[in-house]
Image (cartoon, rainbow, N blue to C red; front, side, top):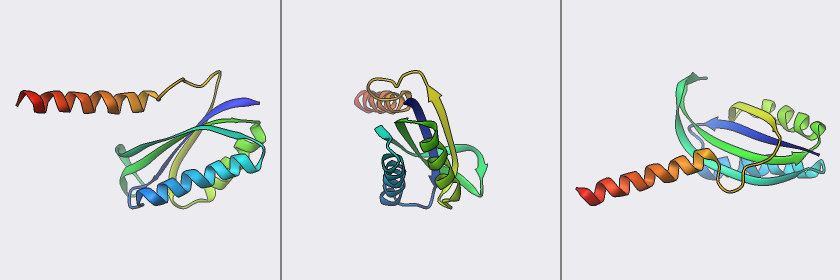
Length: 121
C-alpha cells in the first residue's frame, strides 16, 4: 500500500466538533475501504492568504493515510461533494514524519515565544 498525506480546509463558521466529525468521516471512508489512517492532526483555525468562497479563515486538518490509490480516489470524491470543505489536497509521500508535523512544531515554538515574552514583561 502507498502512503499519503491528505489535508483539507473546512469553512470558518464550523465549530471544532463539526471539524472533528469531518475528520472522523474521512477516517471512516478510508477504513471502510481497507486503508488505515495512521495519524490525524487538527491545525486549528488559521487565516488564509486570500479569500476562498468568501472565507478569510479556515480550519486545517491533516490525515496520514496508508491505503491503495482507489481508497484515495474515493476519499477525494467524498470530500469534493462535502459543502463544508472548501479546499483539499492529497499527496503521495515516501514515508510519514515521526512525531508532530511541521505545522504542529511551529505552533509549539510560537507558544513558547509568547510565554517567554510574557515572563520578561
